[in-house]
Image 1 (cartoon, rainbow, N blue to C red):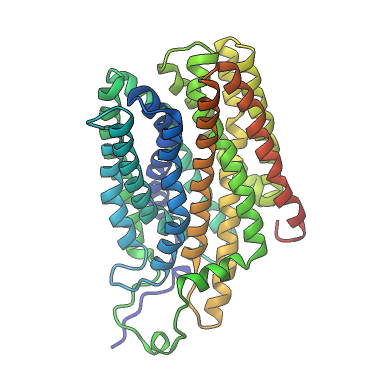
Image 2 (image 1 turned 45 degrees about the vertical axis):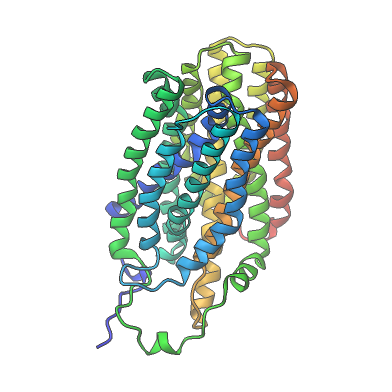
Length: 445
């Protein structure tokens, strides 16, 4: 007897299932944000690694993800097991990712060479396990429902949870470091606490996909046996990148995330240098910004459904460019701390738009392409699209801190130089992303 699991589109997505899925983004947000915000500072100020060497630590794992993420996406697309095609990867990531994160900030050694070897090795493992979880996880909205509104809501809740994770990573994590006494001891304690909390959050989507994972045939039926053989990774990558709308969106997203990464990595130096505040206020500044992000994310989701996601992404990019100039200008002028906090808050709302809108657009594109393939008797390639997308995200979040590290290396951490960098470079990157968005207005909005 042939036993089949219904297609995902035939299974209702309840509020409980949506919440269980979305809570996984808490871990994603934390694990992607803490290194972006704290790793450069941890390497240079705590481990004593030169900024140029620290830039290598930040960049190499993200460059590796350019190749690793699409491979993981293709691998999960083609996986057929009793546990589904996404859950085995989520389970592996949920085990390895917290362990690598805790080890990264519990360095038993310091200094240029030893600190570099430890931090680079742990961060490379962290990036590898992150992909095993994040790529299959992020592919789910594109395949779970044929309804664009349903996908938008699922992505909206996921990104809201992700912003809570980002807030925890940027705001709570530095506070934990200070609470546990700072230095290597403070960072090690923070790593353990955050890793344990994120492990709990990662259980949610694994449990949710027990019912909703797509490829869980107990036995291959005639349709499966008679279907065309699946393409290899290279062929699948070509199919995904042949989509002009996806190419333009990915290029815009890369520039936008580079801008975000540059501002996030520079923030600790602005707070302690230009604004003259203690390290504990790093979390306050970034926490205020990300609280505004969390509060505004649901509104961006509604605005996208009403006015078009692409149009609202243009608005978000313009808003973030203006906000970066405001933050950098306030740092240049050594503005009072209250004004500085208000400037960080001003960057929160457009940052939410730079998260919700691109991910929703990417899910629409992946669903449309994969639905057409399934209609022709072929397998969907949501994972490949997602792998390319997450590798783009990671590259942007690596390029931004790398640019910041370069400025620090060239200027010796001069406050005025960092302020000028934040005022102009991220704004120019956000504005440059419009080049890839405006011409595509003829396409889907």
